Image (cartoon, rainbow, N blue to C red; front, side, top):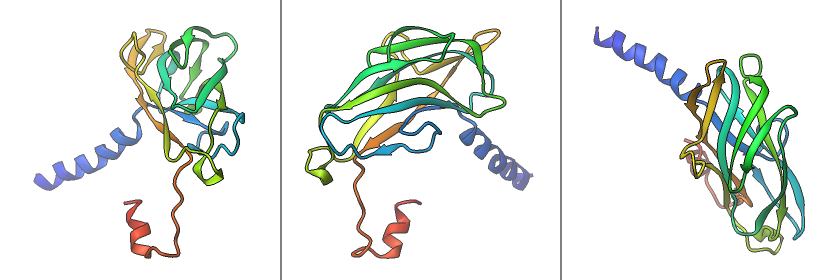
Length: 184
């Protein structure tokens, strides 16, 4: 009996962890790159706020983008047919029509932002190193929310963190075990 309960928990834990709705800022259109190295003052970049694992037709989202000093948002766009209140840096609420189908595609772009780098990475002579950009709770709504169409049932997203100017790891003076332990 005890073995079957443990086996059931081991099966259900990965489903709960990997199926949790997340929202993150990506530096490429296909969600994957969550780090970037701005190399000059005045550099501009389009970044994408994407949602993952919602398992429904998402009809609205609410979140805020927390930018570090040295980075500014110049413009943002939302998908055609959508409406918004606010902006990503001060808190934004977006409705989508038609709703975004997360059943067919496990992720969707929720918003595109254009970032202006006022400072650049330490490795290029700037001052930024390991600087986080976070998806955080909407200041009025108090969370990172989404709603599922047609009943508009609300659910929580988990906000992810992207990194500007991630620190480099020199492998010449590190053992393989030390490098491997960073990913365990």
